Image 1 (spheres, rainbow, N blue to C red):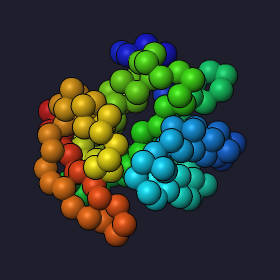
Image 2 (cartoon, rainbow, N blue to C red):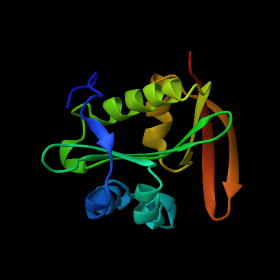
Image 3 (spheres, helix red, strand yellow):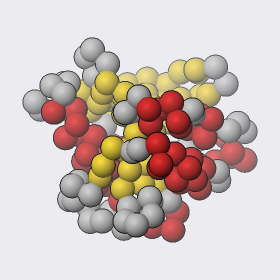
Image 4 (cartoon, rainbow, N blue to C red):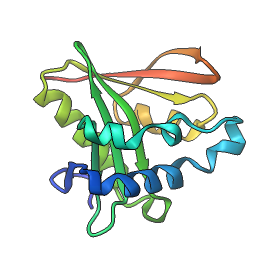
Length: 154
């Protein structure tokens, strides 16, 4: 998948649930030791998210990227973006972020919100490159999170 291709992204089906879990676990597992807790996306109810039509996947034939989007009244929450480490650096993440932008526009939502753990410093370099601005840092239970937003032109 190239950085500008979002047509290869599709809604996940129940048959994708195991792959969604596997990609999410592979993408987030290395953070456990660093942040001292299991990252929230690894503990998500993937089957429920798929059933609620919140999950999008990419990869052919195997799923290599996962995006979890939750529409709200005034924004789209990008709950998780996961790229399998075997395909890191190949534009999968960029494509998923572009898809989130397109999805927000299609839903008529003026912004995307997301959060990341404060110790996932890689994300602090990535998200601003794609138009996200840091809004606040706060504790959410045991998670020290940085909250970002991105305005979307509808």
